[in-house]
Image 1 (cartoon, helix red, strand yellow):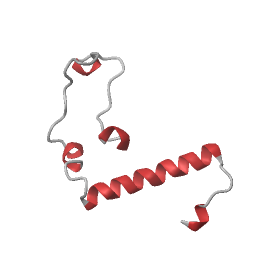
Image 2 (cartoon, one colour):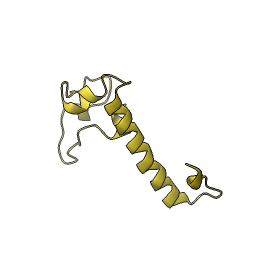
Image 3 (cartoon, one colour):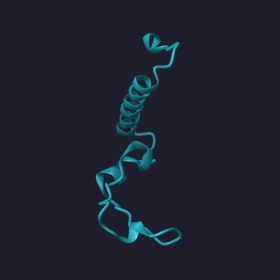
Image 4 (spheres, helix red, strand yellow):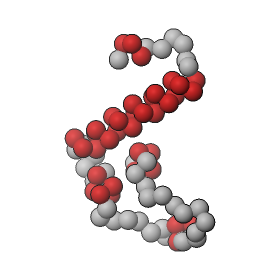
Length: 76
């Protein structure tokens, strides 16, 4: 879920660490970070706010790029 919401820590493209290994090699996980705690309760108001804001941003980007017609943007 964190990956889809953009809540993963950013990788250094010039670096190589345990997360660069192919599966099934174990990856490091940032347990206890604010991003990790945010997704622990999928029904929390805080997480739903992040989901809603992310979906608004993604919908806007999709509309700008693809300009699909007809569009129900006025109905939302």
